[in-house]
Length: 519
Image (cartoon, rainbow, N blue to C red; front, side):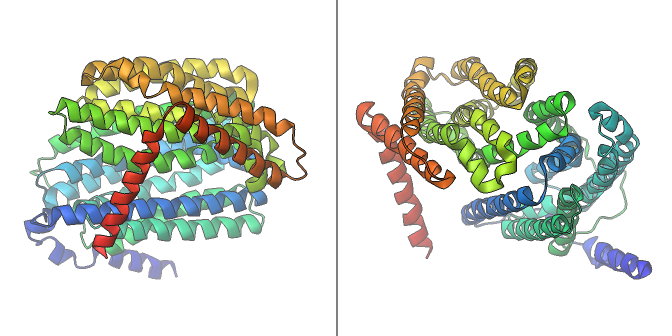
């Protein structure tokens, strides 16, 4: 049986290798026409893929939370804080290097493949060797075997990196979407079945590990490219330099997003971390659905109009105002209904996570505003300055986290939002100096939404206490209605924010007009 499996893998990896080595250069550099049409279609595909992926994650989170315990999630989170960073070595760097290169060839891609594979295999061995150190750091013996198994994912990630990059380079994003959906569904089914059968935290490990394995298999089936032996004359130094810089920026950002979990797991243990992790996942779900697609479009648009100051300023301020308007509304909802959301979705054993989600609430709007700072740095061609700002802001956030952890997981969640509010002020100041947009114009587009968030949250909290609330579901609906009917009327009619509704209607009209033209 083992011999049969090995022969199958060998056939998959090296099928048609003789023909692959002789592919025409246009296979690697295919852009000859219809780029605009492909880009529009690919954008729609990726938005759809992200939406479907979010639904899969949501269903998985709800079901697994009822089958497993906070400690199960906490133990795996202790490992993934480190393993996911190493899992992305090569992927965040080599992919961008392959995509952005004007011309590439078989030798260059093959050399990147072997370099990435050697690096990832080495990191897997090192991670396994240091797993006892990780267990000692957290004072959890169960962390050791989890880390050893998770290390296998590093190798499968390296095996699929170049294939996925070439698919993206050829703008075949329908394949990426199919890959993500298949791996998401199968890994979720595996996790649910394992949890149902009583495997405990190994169900989460099974999901985490099955994703890179399934992704790798799909990528090799979807992309006909196969690596050749390493070449001495491939000239990949510029690509490696680009990859290193890209991964450096990713690493600092990753550290900034995960240092809170590392501190919490170290200080308070796996049970507290499990509740925090589930609340954090639900908190970032709506944030990611807004941040990623809006950022991609905004960065592309701002880059194209950077030589037209008036258009640049107008587009940035309109975008900033809209996401602030929507983000602060989401902040009010999560701040007021966090406990009910957790109870309805995850069940009564996640009580503490409800309080943590409420503490995350004020951060929803400000994290969307904070994200716009990077738009200006990148659209102005200053990634080096953004890297320095990210490094300094990460140090400040870490110091604030150590203050927040004194008050437990809810205190840490509050410190997450507090750090963003404090850093947004100097961040926007730097962005205004770089872009020429006046800071008072930025503030003029923000203060009304901040005020409406505070007003709506306070009034909804006070009014909700005066009503009889027989069930959790009734309480959630009541609070949601109170937030909605205090936030929008105040913003639109009292603070005269009708422009935001008009902007939303204009966007919807353009979108549906485009859809009708496509059909």
